[in-house]
Amino acid sequence: MHILILADELFAGRERSLLTRLEVGLADEGIRIVYAVPEAVLEHTPGGATDLSGVISKVITYSPGSMALTRGLVVRKIQRSIAMAIGEEETIDIIHVFGGNAWEIGRDLAKATGAALIIEAWRTGLAPRARLLASTCKEEPLFLASDPSIERHLQTPQEPAPRAPDPVTLRTRVVNWGVLAPSSIRPTFVPNRPATLMLIGSGRDARAWEAALRGIQIAAHEGADLLVFCDSLAAKRVNLWALARSLNLLDRISLIEELEGRRDLMLHGDVLILPEALGEQRSIILEAMACGMVVLAAADPNTSLLQPGRTAFIIDKPSPATWSKILIELYREPARAATIAASAYLFIQLHRKASDHIKGVLDAYQLMAGDGSFPFSTDPR
Image (cartoon, rainbow, N blue to C red; front, side, top):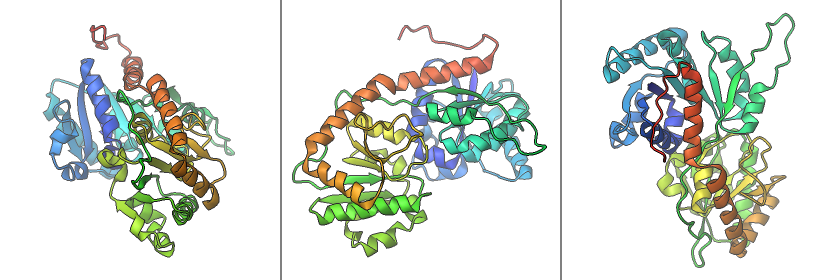
């Protein structure tokens, strides 16, 4: 069986480690993979296709196009690239799409090739768009929800407009993302060393980011030795640099391009800060918990991952005062941080294993294959 993993630029960069784990797991089960990413991704990857799992997958590139006419050209080019990668006589059985900017290309490619279509839904806000896309598909797609709350939003009926057609019922399945946990976690808030804070998010909620940064400023003023690393794109969206200047924090803040994809840097932090509550799933949260980082997040009812007192410290009513209060407490009482970090590590080991994610995806592929020809490894592992 051949699978096309089609990723947009944001997902290919930010979730590269997730996609790599998935490719390795699928290849181990005998699945043959073609990995399609925008040309810009390959151009910005130092090692080229090899660094994009090219040893495991056949890597092809495409030029993203949003207009219908342009998409037709993109689809035909992808088809030619696939034929060159796997041979004219072979076909793609399933197209698995990651990232909203590739949804329409995946749909049109499924129509052109007859392949089954699977779409990854990683945030609750995608539900209306998912219904619209499903209504334009030739065959019913399967939406993989990376959290139960996302599936609930996908299945919640829309309020019908006057004289509008009946709302679309989506075919869904929950497949939680998973990660590999090391044998032990590393310590955080090491004495005589600045505490490092990693700020990530979409940058859609400027007020949330401002409250978090003002809270950091208060904590620093109260004596907490803090260094802040922030994703440059999110910072630009919320005009964080100007706010940091007004708060005299420029000497404590570094803006890093595509920080979320920089696991080499991200996972050496002490605290992962999530200022926004937008019902989004990010594999970096899982990886942070798996390595022992402390997660500090605004309360988000639309994710089962952020559980107060078990996996993260949760800010119920985000304000500068509440952000600073918990930061000061963690800095002064590192044992509290260690307790939650250990609990989150155990949660990952029990409930968010990479092997469970792979199994869930394989089950979804088997469901969409539908002909009983799905290859499974006979290895008892």
